[in-house]
Every structure is written in C-alpha cells, then in structure tokens.
Length: 165
Image (tube, rainbow, N blue to C red; front, side, top):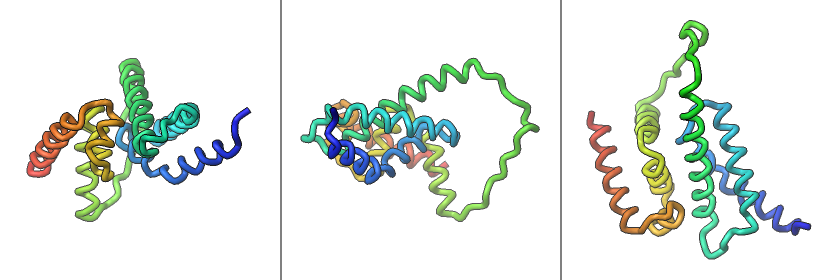
C-alpha cells in the first residue's frame, strides 16, 4: 500500500510546479485539446515515476526531464497522425486574431521561433529561459554541460538573426 504522505507530496509538487508543465506543453503544441491530453500524460508519468525519483536531483530538473520526454514522444506520434489527416475547408472554421501590444508581439514572435527549433534545442531554450543553469539542463537532457553551453550559444545566435529579420 502506498504511503499517503508521498501521494500528498507529489500532488503538492505538481501544483507548485504546474507552470513548468504548462511552459513545456505550450511549446510543443498549440491546440487546446492536445495541450490538455499532453498535460494529463505528463502528470501521469510524474506520478508513476515518483517512487523512483532520486532526491539528489532538483525536483524541477526531474520534472523537466519527464515533461520533455513525454512531449517529444507525443509530438512524434502527432506528426505521424497528421500524415494521415485530411484537411478541412478553410470556410468551415474562422479564427479571429486579437490585437496585441508591441511587447505581446515580441512574445508571440519568440513563441513562433521556439516552435521552429528541433525538440532538443526547444527543451534547452525553455529550461534556459526559465533560469535553469547549464548543469540542471545537462541532467534533464542527458547531454554534457559543455554541450549545453554550445547549444545555448547557437540558439542565441539564431534568435538574434530571426529578430533582426
């Protein structure tokens, strides 16, 4: 039988770090229904793997690793599913875009640019923007600290070029 305190602990950990899950999910899919499915998958995997959690690692690093792994798997499955989907007529659905201020436009541009990165670079950028250090990113992504530094430098260069365009 499971320890009730560990169940309370994991639900509190998820609640305290829900913003982390939302950031990852928002970076990997834009459809609200898919986002809900992905959030549920991530939370399920966090709960499922909590008993094996190594408390030597930061909780957020562990959660990022799970969130990114689940998101990348979900993204791959989604790409496969989309190959078999049939497009609907554009007249069936109309999307109204809201007006946004200059700052909102910059944030929207950044989100668009993040969507263009491959899954690993996207994950690194999200963790970097969230204030994680190179070691934490390295642990979550399973790559060396120096590789993280190199990738961040390249990502910054790419983003600077995109914002100048």
